[in-house]
Image 1 (cartoon, protein in one colour):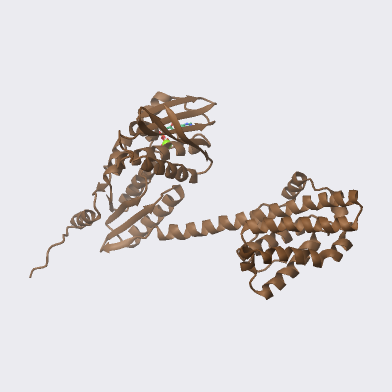
Image 2 (image 1 turned 90 degrees about the horizontal axis):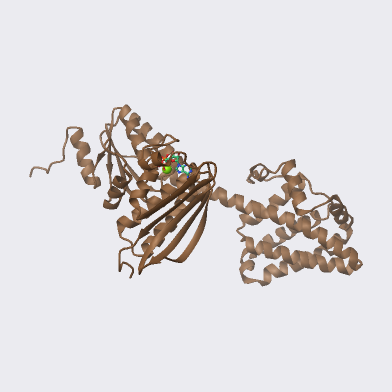
Length: 308
Length: 140
Ligand SMILES: Nc1ncnc2c1ncn2[C@@H]1O[C@H](COP(=O)(O)OP(=O)(O)O)[C@@H](O)[C@H]1O
Ligand SMILES: [Mg+2]
C-alpha cells in the first residue's frame, strides 16, 4: 500500500528483482536466515511491546530526538507503525514487497525530518533490545545464530533507509536547482525591442541550453533588435561559457538581432584575452549603462536630458 | 618547493568543475592573490577539470598550497586514465578540438598560469600540473 505522496523509490533506486538479489547476496541474507527469523515470530510477538517501549525510551530521553516526538498522538501512531515494522523482521521473507515496505518506513522518517544519525542510533538500540530478548528465550548458541540473522536483515533495512534519505535529498536539490534555473534566466524588456538578460552564478551545459532556448524565444516573441547579456554576476568565464555566449550571439543574429555583452570586469576581460577567445562577434561594454546606451543608438535613438 | 596543504577531489561529474574551482578560488584568495590571479587560476581549474571529465572520462584533481623561496602558490594536478592526447603540439597551439568546442582550453590555460607541465600518452591517460604564484609579500 502506497500513500499518495510517496515518491516511487522502487523505480528511482532501480529496485527490481535483480537488484534485490544483489543486495541479499551482499548482505549475506540466506533462506535459512529468513526461515530462522520466521520461526521466531511468536517470540517476537511476546517481546514486541517491551522492545518498542525501550526503543522509544531512548528517543524520548534524548532531548534532540524528543523534539521530533513532541506530539503524544504522533508517538502513538509511530509506535503502531514500529510494531508492524518490527514484526516484519520476523515474517520470514525478504522480497520486493518487503523492500517497498521498508522504503516507506525510511520515507516517513525522512519526511518528519528525523536526522539520519538518530535513525541509525535508534536501530542500534533495536538490535540490543532484541538480542537481550532472544537470549532470555533461547539457548545461547541458538540465540547467537538468530542475532546474526537479525543483524543481517537489519543492516539490509538500514541500507534501504539510507537510500531513501539520499534519494529525497537529491530530489530536493534537483527541485531547488530547477527553481533557481528558472529564476536565473530572467529576460527583462528594458525598452521597446531591447531585452536584457542578467546572468548570475555558474553556467554549465544544462543551464546554457535553457538560457539559449529562453533567449531565442523571447527575441522572436518580442521581435527584439538587441539582446543585452550582462555577465557581471558570472563567477568564471572560461572557454565553455564563452562558447555558449558566442553560439547565443550567432543564433540571435539569425533572428535579425544583435548581442551586447556587458558587465565585464577587468580580470574577466584579461582572462578571456589570455584564453585567446575571439568575442568580436559581440558588441562589448564594461558597464551595463553603456550597453543600454549602445542598444538605443543601434535603434537610432538616444537618451537626452529633458528640456526645461 | 614545499607542499603545505593538499586535497584530492574526484572528477566524476560536470558538477565537479564547480566544486574544484570553488576550492581553488578560496585558496587563491586566502593566499592574497590579486583579482586577475584569482580569476586566472580559477579559470585554469575550470578548463582542466572539464577536460578531465569530458575528454578524459573522469579522474582526480589535486589542489595544493605550495611554498618556494618565501613565495606562496597554488599548484593543481589533474590525472585521468582516458584516451590521452594524440597530437599534443597541435592541441597546445590552440584552436583544435575533437568535440566541436573552441579548442582553446589547454593553450589558454598555459598562458594563464606560471608553471605548466603536461604528460599524455595514448591509451594511458593524461597528467597535467600547473601552478600560479602570489606576488612577494602578498600574504597578510
Ligand atoms: N584530459 C584529456 N584527455 C584526452 N584528451 C584531451 C584532454 N584534454 C584535452 N584533450 C584533447 O585536446 C583537445 C583540446 O582541448 P581544449 O584545448 O581544452 O579544447 P576543447 O576542450 O574545447 O576541445 C580536446 O578536444 C581533446 O581532444
Ligand atoms: Mg577544454
